[in-house]
Length: 266
Image (cartoon, rainbow, N blue to C red; front, side, top):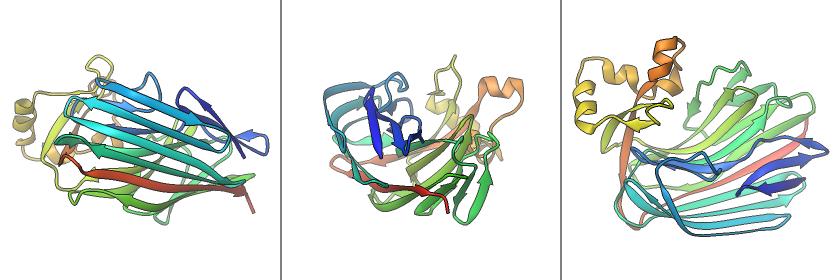
């Protein structure tokens, strides 16, 4: 197994002559900012003192990030353990009291090699639904005619008001797998308009609060784009969804340790 490190990410993974992945990364967001390890993807943040070191079997990154609602130190440590296994570890340290939507370790796989995905005992074929099949579980598997992949959550750290989830998503020509910390005791809920012209920003908080008091609207909009993506032309252009935002105190650490193992299909 060999990887290619390009544009700050594990961008290719060669297993017996087949590139099984699209670029991997790490992501997190607050009400307005969105950080992505993949260049050109994030929104409304600044990065300082970034250092990256990698070779054929290890990749380490350390950076400081200023978001709209907080400052963070982010460390990533990825390793090829053997010819079948990669271990990915990430730690985000909160440098000042902050708000957080989620903290994500991101995997992407080419669906050319994997026709079926399984999570929490449920199996899905790739149909480009773009639905987040998300569960409080510790493993995801992908299966194809030639190869199989298992992703296993080994360890995590989070504040008491956040909980860990894995999700599986069939999107265009890929399977997306996220290890994702989400707030289950949110400090506030915002309505974001997830479209290019509004640039995935939240409505003013007073407007969000007023709209979310309308009976039934909060439940209808909660993670709507993830649960049931809009299909109509008008709603796809607006693309509203309600997003819970948790509070994180300065000094708090959030972390992931996730193993990916690939093998020949039996």
